[in-house]
Image: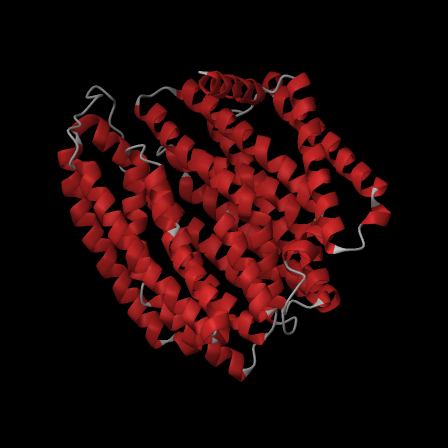
Length: 501
């Protein structure tokens, strides 16, 4: 989260929001979305069978299986990336219809630099899924920080050597190579441990070919939806892609970390419960995952929505980042903040769907993504000429909300209600706590309205409002007995006792 924030600040300060940053972020998104899609695809598809393999047959069999699959993934990804490299110009022209000729060629250069190392990202996606299946959750997270660290080093050298964003793209590519080496070391160490099968009596589940096709369609939707957003933003003039990217980074930093962490950990538990045939434990884990995510994401969404303008002004509004870009980025964040809650719920629902190999995955996914993509395209087509780049996050919010509703209805039909009526109380309590947080933030802003003229004053007021909003949320959630607040109190007591000792 900290690295993402520093990188966004550095790029905004050094390069602003213009045609060069548009080209860089566009190329970066094309490749990073593919890498993220592969990460999620392997996480959802491979963790359940890898968990069963480790728990029933041991690490020797898992290691042999992994060596074979890693080479297959790397070679297939290399062939696809070679084709994309040859057609890079055509890909950029199609996906960025609003770019000028100069922007297209700049984006093409960045795209090719990042595309070279994408096969390594594909192989590390499978390696990361293996480590998660073995419950070694920290190692993939640490490994994936390395490209960002290299980008940060390159940005620190820009003022000294007058590097452009091309050097940052090269640094990200170099960091991906370092990441792959780190993953190789971690995997070798993990599978060499003296672990044996711990649950040889677990019922075996058959491999679901439909689940693979559903996963491919799901990843096509995620990647395609973001590409649609970038293409629509490219039609809104200079700075449209860059301000959308800055807003998405600021919005997704903390909540994205929480959502991904909770889903990764709980998905392994979903797969383990289903491997043992314990349906009730699986349903309870789904509820716990939803609550754990919302406990952090809901107050973050409220804070970003209420404080979008001062946060952008304080963090980005300096250097080459002009006032119009500050205003536009803040307006985009106001639309993206509610989307955080939707994406948090979708993360758990999608994990619950793919953890169970017996569900009609293809039918569910086709119905859901067809409706969502149609809504996204129609809303952009209707409102982009009137509202500009703000149409893009608004259409994204509407389409993803529709996707979430359809997915939940399908799951409830196939599995029964994931949250029964008598179990809805904690979720209602968190909604009330979020309202209390919003009221606290608004009160602080209203009381300090005259003191927000300078950057220092805005920083102080934003920090105070965030603190008051967080305390209000926790107080109301605790009074209404949200289960996760009890766990937080227990963790704090243990930490206090260790500190006293």
